[in-house]
Image 1 (tube, rainbow, N blue to C red):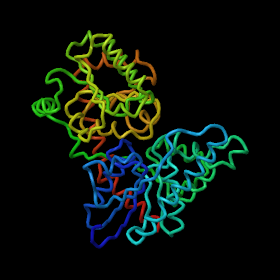
Image 2 (tube, rainbow, N blue to C red):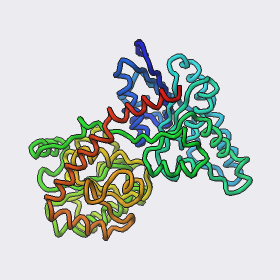
Image 3 (tube, one colour):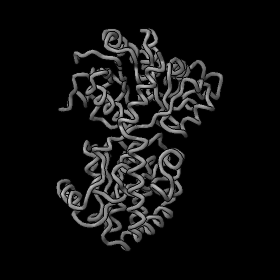
Image 4 (cartoon, helix red, strand yellow):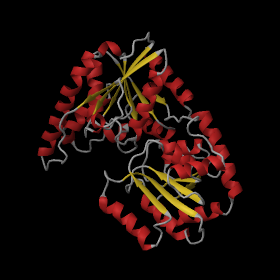
Length: 412
């Protein structure tokens, strides 16, 4: 624990600890590191080391307090699932209550970067028991937004554990919307808008910055990538929700027309549907593109180097909250393409100005857009410059951290 005079003392509660993968949780760790480097703040993280990967890793922090308890990897069947969920709530409570009480003098605020896990929502209840101020965030539409959490279509739902979890959720003092799209969801919910603040994820604009050609070549050599040609990049989980198959399909259509084009898919495969992953690899082999496509197949900590090695970033997701990878790519000055889901098209990219949008689920339209851009390097360059300017203005660490500070102080 750091000994310093603090104006702000924050406890971040997370159900995923590094090096495990999770966008909201990665943002929470980066935020904690920034806070802990300041003289006017102190932060601790109480986290569930679900797989034991944190304790087994070399990445340790003195402000992280890992918890461990057994989680049944398979859902029960029928009515038994409700007993299983209730038991899980109790386990979360007993795992959290001791460290939250023991460390209570080291924090005034509890901050959840994810509201989807029962673990996080139980922390809200405990925090209110301890007289702390609680902030909780929505990070994925359709998962932890207030309408999804508070949906009870049948009267019997009010007797199920999910109703109790929702009651915990409603105890928070403030709610953070990651974008105007999520804010619109809050407006349709029963959460008072006086308690809602819109604060996006942030990007380190000094780390994620545009590169010159020589530096790009050096990075490619360091990462064992192709030293020549143009690289299309995807960063994220290799799963159907992220739409990786759409990207592979679009790439296979245009690869022959652009011999210098390469595809780099960065992200873990082990935690997702292996049939889906193998299907992607088989498609690449069938089209004889194995020399033009790379799967890293693991989580990586140097995302910035992969982005600065690339030319085009594509996120073909069908569901998101506020994807951090998009603003990181924009900060690097890449040409960014995203699906037209509101979470990207309304919250991040101004189509044709600082990025480009294609119809969600339509790989034909994606390949057509790619073809047009690849023959117009001037348009790509101008788009990248405007994307970088937008990241500096709205999403830098400094801008976002100031908004969080204002939020904490507003509760008092």
